[in-house]
Length: 385
Image (cartoon, rainbow, N blue to C red; front, side, top):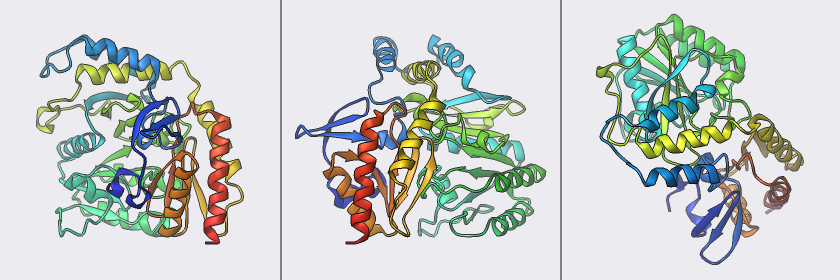
């Protein structure tokens, strides 16, 4: 299994045959507390009854209509309304976050008249040629004219990064600046509020669009509705996905109201906005409206911080709400931690030296505390191995 799956190949992950709420069951009858929740997508837990019932009802109706209107669209729009940031609208529903990011690129090109884009190293906007280029060097020799990728705060000083961003925007080639305000695949690194606000200001002055990627962090995963709101930003476009469909494959693009989709932006695709996806999103958002998700995420954060307060020297815990990354110092320590987690009945995600802890907001608090205590003990043991 590729490490891109979120589980290192050497960990020999279990074969999961059933998932319910915060628990996974493998083909040997073993149970695991799920602290990864499908790459962070199942914020309400696996098999949330209201979402399952909504999908089951829609399965009896049309799945795909080739772009023809259907009533589930209106249901989606109504359910989405309370969750929209001020001055923004749901411009398009897509099937994946990568597809939403690609659409944002095309939107920015048309509105700005510029073909270039600016991203930051370590960000995860997707794995197409263009979206991958925004976040990392794939060592394939690909060059996109006018595109630039700058280091992020784990690699450089904020002032130096902003200076480089100003220079890049001054080239007149950049039509969009992509920002993942908390880098879920890069150790949960996050810049300061001042950094983001300066970046947003220079982006607007340069006539480019600010695109905030909230596919992982959005819909209360970090405790706030959207992470960009925590920093007081007003983006031109927002990428959403994962939690807003509770694991069903759906994503979307929000746009500030001065902007609108045009045919030459090439919106839509075969599966975009299909009735099943609309039903999944609508019912998930309806459930979210009945829960105090900021409070639930805050409770998760309190448990995680308490259990990991005695980490070995050099180890670190970063994150917020129900999104945390344990920095295990070295990839080898990360591998040991991953083995220890699954042996103790805890399912986590891993990438390099980072252990990703992203449980459902509704996870059982006592079980979460026990699991984190086991991982904290395993960290101290791994540091002496």
